[in-house]
Length: 254
Image (cartoon, rainbow, N blue to C red; front, side, top):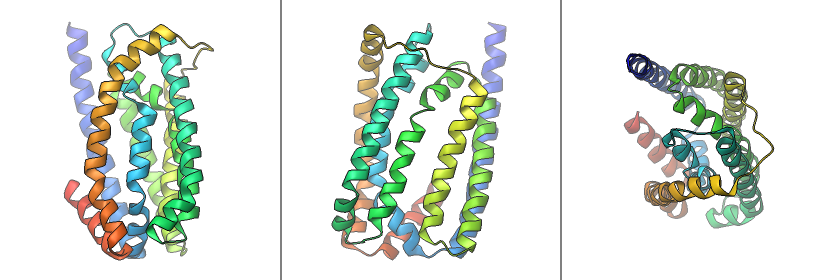
């Protein structure tokens, strides 16, 4: 009991350190980028936010929460969830890639076609680390997660600033997110040192989906509700207007 208490206290401490540090880094990077980029750049990226938020919700499907909730997780459970996340991540990536021309036409902004294609890679890449993050949370290892998040925020943020300074505009935001995703996945794979088994259990999937599907439903409703305003502003107003709105929302959330 004493060991569990110590782990819980350590977890709370490192979770707080990680959150404040990551938010602080993102805030500083955001201020610098705001001086180098235009509101329209943020608005263009914000237009497609709802599509990627929904895709990310499907990729996890509540399996991460189901793994954390289960006390006696086995490698079979983790492997089953891992392969499911990969498959859904690939499907979402392909769907967004294929839908990019229609999304660009919907908002009447041609550059969105190429932006969405590149951004869709995030969906597939991020699916590789969902189980690894869940394993760390299950073990109450928030120290490792905090270090990963801080390093990712610093490196991707610096890269974003350099690209914005070089005049890449909206692409600096896209590549910054892509770098952050790749780096976070690599670091989580290194930290956990876990390799999935070549097996997929139907009974494990049934259990995980039984709990995860409820999380998925709630998350979908929340995601659509939270991003609907952004979608409407992007459709009926200008990218500049949406840029001001999205940055305002970000600062309020911070």
